[in-house]
Image (cartoon, rainbow, N blue to C red):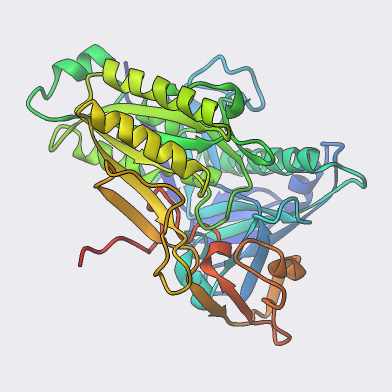
Length: 430
């Protein structure tokens, strides 16, 4: 099995142009052409293409998803297999080019109150990776009378299609950095590094319905049991967000494409541990489904002969029951488990941070408190619909002040307490 290769092209500027192309580190975007292609979806009436750059006085709200532009050079036809084509080729094979430093951001009329905010400067920018990216923002206007689920679908597919189109601009461009991700069979992994602890990463993906969904190879994860993946699969478009969970801790598509837990485990493989792979585990709402998923996950981790598990949450509240249930099952089998989550601990941080707990959960990494309050300064420009601020998670009636400043919880800032650990907040042992 040949290694999977990610080739990153560093983008240092984004501008509008007559042709979508990359020249001297600048991505030129043909906004008219891109909009025309996206409007081929008859559920979309209009798409306005806007640019937002780091340091600008720009606010984007409400943000639905964020996607990194990519293209397959070899090993597959589609950047997101199973979404626009049959899932007949696995992700994580061949070569994928990445436009590093660029994001496609989808916005428009609110679908669900759990959509987020990105400020390109000021205090809010300190809480979001996306404030440091060159953002191609799609302001998507659906046709009249479209239902919420159809609206979400149209926006999700438009974002993925735009990321694929922009990614194609990098196909013939010289890359700046190459990362090789090993593709190994399980027998090879089990026979290698025999003196090191065998570790499995269990990545929860929310699949609760009511616009809280993730997609695995194009299939809604509501219809999936836990799925075993190679590390490269996770980071190569097999996982897509349709997730309207709270913006601070939801996994956007970008987070899946750049999962830092996978990256760190790959760096430690063969040094301090033997990284066996990733178990993508759906999170459902009903207790019987939670038990089903966690029992299946335990079975698969046990079959792999794992000594330890890293278990990351997706969402908050309800998914914490899954987090604790699986932790308890694993620890009782002697499989040491570390949880990665965030908290809602009240504005003073003094309240219980999680909706569930178990005595076995004695190793927990938390990525911040979503209830932390901030005052965000006014921005000169708003892309989207600023009146949504009073209604999104983390906001309240009166959050948007007359002068344009915002009084809110960081729960409303896109990715601020991301449960994969991609942001600036961290756990500090005292």
